[in-house]
Image (tube, rainbow, N blue to C red; front, side, top):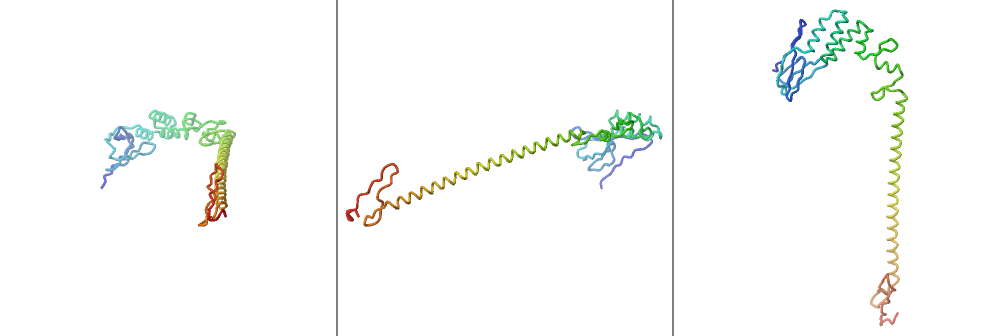
Length: 244
Protein backbone atom coordinates (compact mmCIF):
# COMPACT_ATOMS: atom_id res chain seq x y z
CA UNK A 1 0.00 0.00 0.00
CA UNK A 2 1.32 3.46 -0.93
CA UNK A 3 2.11 5.75 1.99
CA UNK A 4 0.48 9.18 1.66
CA UNK A 5 1.80 12.20 3.58
CA UNK A 6 -0.44 15.27 3.82
CA UNK A 7 1.14 18.50 5.09
CA UNK A 8 -1.32 20.67 7.04
CA UNK A 9 -0.92 24.41 7.63
CA UNK A 10 -1.79 25.72 11.10
CA UNK A 11 -3.49 29.10 11.27
CA UNK A 12 -1.43 30.09 14.34
CA UNK A 13 1.61 30.93 12.28
CA UNK A 14 3.58 30.23 9.13
CA UNK A 15 4.07 26.54 8.42
CA UNK A 16 7.12 24.93 6.93
CA UNK A 17 7.60 25.23 3.19
CA UNK A 18 9.08 22.54 1.03
CA UNK A 19 11.91 22.75 -1.47
CA UNK A 20 11.83 19.71 -3.74
CA UNK A 21 15.24 19.35 -5.40
CA UNK A 22 15.21 17.57 -8.75
CA UNK A 23 17.84 15.84 -10.80
CA UNK A 24 19.64 18.23 -13.14
CA UNK A 25 19.49 21.13 -10.68
CA UNK A 26 15.77 21.93 -10.83
CA UNK A 27 13.77 22.89 -7.74
CA UNK A 28 10.09 23.20 -6.83
CA UNK A 29 9.28 25.53 -3.91
CA UNK A 30 5.91 25.53 -2.20
CA UNK A 31 3.79 23.33 0.00
CA UNK A 32 3.55 19.59 -0.45
CA UNK A 33 -0.11 18.63 -0.60
CA UNK A 34 0.39 14.97 -1.45
CA UNK A 35 3.29 12.56 -1.56
CA UNK A 36 3.38 8.86 -2.42
CA UNK A 37 6.10 6.36 -3.20
CA UNK A 38 5.74 7.33 -6.88
CA UNK A 39 5.17 11.09 -6.93
CA UNK A 40 5.03 14.33 -4.97
CA UNK A 41 2.58 17.21 -5.58
CA UNK A 42 3.53 20.73 -4.54
CA UNK A 43 1.18 23.72 -4.23
CA UNK A 44 3.15 26.69 -5.64
CA UNK A 45 0.47 29.32 -5.06
CA UNK A 46 -0.90 29.73 -8.59
CA UNK A 47 -1.46 26.01 -9.03
CA UNK A 48 0.29 22.75 -8.31
CA UNK A 49 3.11 20.74 -9.81
CA UNK A 50 3.54 16.96 -9.60
CA UNK A 51 6.98 15.37 -9.93
CA UNK A 52 7.92 11.71 -10.04
CA UNK A 53 9.89 10.54 -7.02
CA UNK A 54 12.41 8.98 -9.37
CA UNK A 55 13.40 12.55 -10.35
CA UNK A 56 13.59 13.86 -6.77
CA UNK A 57 17.02 14.15 -5.15
CA UNK A 58 15.95 15.57 -1.80
CA UNK A 59 13.25 17.56 0.01
CA UNK A 60 14.09 20.44 2.36
CA UNK A 61 11.65 22.23 4.64
CA UNK A 62 11.79 25.95 5.41
CA UNK A 63 9.45 28.91 5.69
CA UNK A 64 8.29 29.97 2.18
CA UNK A 65 6.97 33.39 1.07
CA UNK A 66 3.76 31.71 -0.07
CA UNK A 67 3.03 30.24 3.32
CA UNK A 68 4.03 33.44 5.06
CA UNK A 69 1.59 35.34 2.86
CA UNK A 70 -1.19 32.99 3.82
CA UNK A 71 -0.36 33.38 7.50
CA UNK A 72 -0.31 37.19 7.21
CA UNK A 73 -3.54 37.29 5.20
CA UNK A 74 -5.29 35.29 7.92
CA UNK A 75 -4.36 38.00 10.44
CA UNK A 76 -5.53 41.07 8.47
CA UNK A 77 -8.36 42.81 10.37
CA UNK A 78 -11.67 43.10 8.54
CA UNK A 79 -11.99 46.33 6.57
CA UNK A 80 -8.31 47.28 6.93
CA UNK A 81 -7.47 48.46 3.42
CA UNK A 82 -3.96 49.66 4.38
CA UNK A 83 -3.05 46.25 5.82
CA UNK A 84 -4.11 44.60 2.56
CA UNK A 85 -2.14 47.22 0.60
CA UNK A 86 1.02 46.52 2.57
CA UNK A 87 0.53 42.78 2.13
CA UNK A 88 0.05 43.25 -1.63
CA UNK A 89 3.30 45.22 -1.87
CA UNK A 90 5.08 42.57 0.19
CA UNK A 91 3.77 39.81 -2.08
CA UNK A 92 4.94 41.68 -5.19
CA UNK A 93 8.39 41.93 -3.65
CA UNK A 94 8.50 38.14 -3.44
CA UNK A 95 7.14 37.64 -6.98
CA UNK A 96 3.84 36.28 -5.66
CA UNK A 97 1.79 37.92 -8.42
CA UNK A 98 -1.38 35.90 -7.85
CA UNK A 99 -1.36 36.68 -4.14
CA UNK A 100 -0.59 40.36 -4.78
CA UNK A 101 -3.65 40.64 -7.03
CA UNK A 102 -5.69 38.89 -4.40
CA UNK A 103 -4.65 41.45 -1.77
CA UNK A 104 -5.28 44.39 -4.12
CA UNK A 105 -8.77 43.07 -4.84
CA UNK A 106 -9.37 43.25 -1.09
CA UNK A 107 -8.26 46.88 -1.16
CA UNK A 108 -10.66 47.71 -4.02
CA UNK A 109 -13.49 45.95 -2.20
CA UNK A 110 -12.96 48.42 0.68
CA UNK A 111 -11.87 51.47 -1.36
CA UNK A 112 -13.35 51.16 -4.89
CA UNK A 113 -11.62 54.36 -6.11
CA UNK A 114 -8.13 53.46 -4.86
CA UNK A 115 -5.72 54.34 -7.69
CA UNK A 116 -2.83 52.08 -6.70
CA UNK A 117 -4.97 48.98 -6.34
CA UNK A 118 -6.99 49.60 -9.50
CA UNK A 119 -3.87 50.24 -11.55
CA UNK A 120 -2.22 47.09 -10.19
CA UNK A 121 -5.30 45.12 -11.24
CA UNK A 122 -5.07 46.47 -14.81
CA UNK A 123 -7.95 48.89 -14.52
CA UNK A 124 -7.95 52.28 -16.27
CA UNK A 125 -9.86 55.44 -15.43
CA UNK A 126 -12.22 56.65 -18.18
CA UNK A 127 -14.49 59.62 -17.51
CA UNK A 128 -13.85 59.30 -13.79
CA UNK A 129 -14.75 55.60 -13.70
CA UNK A 130 -12.44 52.62 -13.26
CA UNK A 131 -13.01 50.03 -15.99
CA UNK A 132 -11.05 47.14 -17.42
CA UNK A 133 -8.54 47.67 -20.19
CA UNK A 134 -10.81 45.83 -22.63
CA UNK A 135 -13.74 48.06 -21.74
CA UNK A 136 -11.56 51.15 -22.21
CA UNK A 137 -10.50 50.10 -25.69
CA UNK A 138 -14.06 49.31 -26.73
CA UNK A 139 -15.23 52.63 -25.30
CA UNK A 140 -12.75 54.37 -27.63
CA UNK A 141 -14.03 52.43 -30.63
CA UNK A 142 -11.17 49.94 -30.89
CA UNK A 143 -11.66 46.33 -31.96
CA UNK A 144 -9.60 43.30 -31.03
CA UNK A 145 -8.10 41.53 -34.02
CA UNK A 146 -5.75 38.58 -33.71
CA UNK A 147 -4.89 39.47 -30.13
CA UNK A 148 -4.25 43.17 -30.80
CA UNK A 149 -6.35 46.26 -30.28
CA UNK A 150 -6.70 48.51 -33.33
CA UNK A 151 -9.09 50.84 -35.07
CA UNK A 152 -11.70 49.36 -37.45
CA UNK A 153 -9.93 51.11 -40.34
CA UNK A 154 -6.65 49.37 -39.48
CA UNK A 155 -8.39 46.02 -39.31
CA UNK A 156 -10.09 46.58 -42.67
CA UNK A 157 -6.77 47.60 -44.21
CA UNK A 158 -5.10 44.39 -43.00
CA UNK A 159 -7.97 42.23 -44.25
CA UNK A 160 -8.07 44.01 -47.63
CA UNK A 161 -4.31 43.62 -48.09
CA UNK A 162 -4.52 39.91 -47.33
CA UNK A 163 -7.41 39.46 -49.74
CA UNK A 164 -5.49 41.29 -52.49
CA UNK A 165 -2.47 39.07 -51.91
CA UNK A 166 -4.62 35.96 -52.04
CA UNK A 167 -6.32 37.14 -55.26
CA UNK A 168 -2.94 37.85 -56.89
CA UNK A 169 -1.61 34.46 -55.81
CA UNK A 170 -4.69 32.76 -57.30
CA UNK A 171 -4.32 34.74 -60.55
CA UNK A 172 -0.65 33.71 -60.78
CA UNK A 173 -1.60 30.11 -60.16
CA UNK A 174 -4.23 30.14 -62.91
CA UNK A 175 -1.83 31.84 -65.35
CA UNK A 176 0.81 29.20 -64.68
CA UNK A 177 -1.74 26.43 -65.12
CA UNK A 178 -2.89 27.93 -68.46
CA UNK A 179 0.72 28.19 -69.67
CA UNK A 180 1.41 24.59 -68.75
CA UNK A 181 -1.78 23.51 -70.54
CA UNK A 182 -0.75 25.43 -73.66
CA UNK A 183 2.69 23.82 -73.68
CA UNK A 184 1.17 20.36 -73.29
CA UNK A 185 -1.30 21.04 -76.14
CA UNK A 186 1.55 22.19 -78.42
CA UNK A 187 3.57 19.08 -77.58
CA UNK A 188 0.56 16.89 -78.34
CA UNK A 189 0.01 18.68 -81.68
CA UNK A 190 3.68 18.24 -82.64
CA UNK A 191 3.50 14.57 -81.76
CA UNK A 192 0.37 14.12 -83.87
CA UNK A 193 1.97 15.87 -86.90
CA UNK A 194 5.03 13.67 -86.61
CA UNK A 195 2.84 10.58 -86.50
CA UNK A 196 0.88 11.73 -89.57
CA UNK A 197 4.12 12.43 -91.45
CA UNK A 198 5.42 8.95 -90.68
CA UNK A 199 2.16 7.41 -91.86
CA UNK A 200 2.29 9.44 -95.09
CA UNK A 201 5.87 8.37 -95.84
CA UNK A 202 5.02 4.74 -95.14
CA UNK A 203 2.03 4.94 -97.52
CA UNK A 204 4.15 6.51 -100.30
CA UNK A 205 6.82 3.84 -99.97
CA UNK A 206 4.27 1.04 -100.13
CA UNK A 207 2.66 2.60 -103.23
CA UNK A 208 6.04 3.03 -104.91
CA UNK A 209 7.08 -0.61 -104.48
CA UNK A 210 3.67 -1.86 -105.55
CA UNK A 211 3.83 0.12 -108.85
CA UNK A 212 7.40 -0.79 -109.80
CA UNK A 213 7.54 -4.61 -110.10
CA UNK A 214 8.24 -6.85 -113.15
CA UNK A 215 7.44 -10.42 -113.96
CA UNK A 216 10.53 -12.56 -114.35
CA UNK A 217 8.57 -15.60 -115.53
CA UNK A 218 9.31 -17.42 -112.33
CA UNK A 219 7.71 -14.71 -110.22
CA UNK A 220 7.31 -11.03 -109.71
CA UNK A 221 10.23 -8.82 -108.75
CA UNK A 222 11.10 -5.15 -108.51
CA UNK A 223 11.81 -3.28 -111.73
CA UNK A 224 14.70 -1.41 -110.07
CA UNK A 225 16.26 -0.82 -106.67
CA UNK A 226 15.10 2.29 -105.01
CA UNK A 227 17.80 4.86 -104.37
CA UNK A 228 16.50 8.15 -103.05
CA UNK A 229 19.65 10.05 -104.24
CA UNK A 230 19.85 8.65 -107.76
CA UNK A 231 17.62 7.91 -110.70
CA UNK A 232 16.11 4.43 -110.61
CA UNK A 233 18.20 1.78 -112.42
CA UNK A 234 16.27 -0.68 -114.62
CA UNK A 235 16.80 -4.34 -114.05
CA UNK A 236 17.89 -6.37 -117.19
CA UNK A 237 14.92 -7.86 -119.00
CA UNK A 238 14.23 -11.53 -118.79
CA UNK A 239 15.30 -13.09 -122.16
CA UNK A 240 12.62 -15.73 -121.84
CA UNK A 241 9.90 -13.13 -122.04
CA UNK A 242 11.66 -10.86 -124.58
CA UNK A 243 10.92 -7.78 -122.64
CA UNK A 244 7.30 -8.62 -121.98
